[in-house]
Image (cartoon, rainbow, N blue to C red):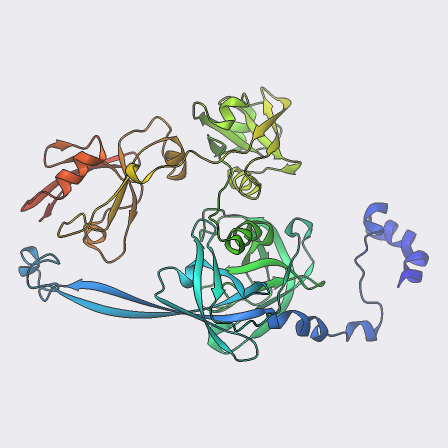
Length: 471
């Protein structure tokens, strides 16, 4: 093929309009029948032993009222009535995982194991192992497991590749356990990069592939032709429940940060920029003297944040981070999240149509202490609700303006009274039965007071909601 390239190189450049740089690309096409008949088998033998099946069992307790289906009596005897009973419900989920450390550390998807009370993995040789969940990062939809009682065994692993070196058209293999039929390998190409709009994590920046990915493949490996892990299979686009050739994988450069934290036994700490970002459209781009609507527009900056200290202003448009082009806010969030805390990043931006650069310190967001949070339990309609005092980093995480203040709902446990009432993450509590909620102590007293009914006022997005709930 090398000789054919020398002979036909100029012809290819002229006939196909290829530049000399592309003509010298190391990737080659098959030029004879023997090359077309080449097999992936040696590569599969190399990488498949490092992919495991993941089985998760979740046992939850639900409060059930015998009058739940009666439109009249349900008004008086709801979940909190003395007639209600607790009932166990068992759910099973199936996925895949990748061994990333020889001691038995496994990387998988958070949605496969989130909330599980029992998790097991089965290796390619059929051995089954119980595992501990050592890190669950719902923001990236990634989790790290550690095999228990491995008996000193050394496990096969996959090496991390570099997802930034992938190109559309590269061959890849997807390995996992679709529909629970057993370990399966499918092949395809990289169909697209930096794909957004896939709402399965906070960082929507995916590798798209046409390698068949089906339910059960979640957490499995996407590998390149060198046997390197380049992605964690995470989601599919489907109308039938099966593969239609549109699958998505989390880039390994994002997964690496979670994996390293899991191996070290630490939590994931990401840099905080401290600015609200907005996508551009053509009208906005024209008003900002931009030729194309590419970049992330800064609309608000938290005082004292890294963005503020680096001199950024509302109206600036971020165009690159450490040389990587930024098309929209999600690309910026991804690039920032893959960088380690403690260093700095070079950020290119446009201000009044002129190109500028700034060096930004990579600092963690100010952390909240236990005293800044409140989880309500007991016999209350608010049981299962977690709230916190609103501050800039939390406001940004919840998509709220920096100027917002008050007590905000940060979590609602499923199958709890608070979940039944309809509270949602991001709700700002304003008033309960005539009491203004200005701090966590006030919320604690109001939520645990003995009431027959509740007049609740809260702010959700741009709406103020008032409702009455029976006690």
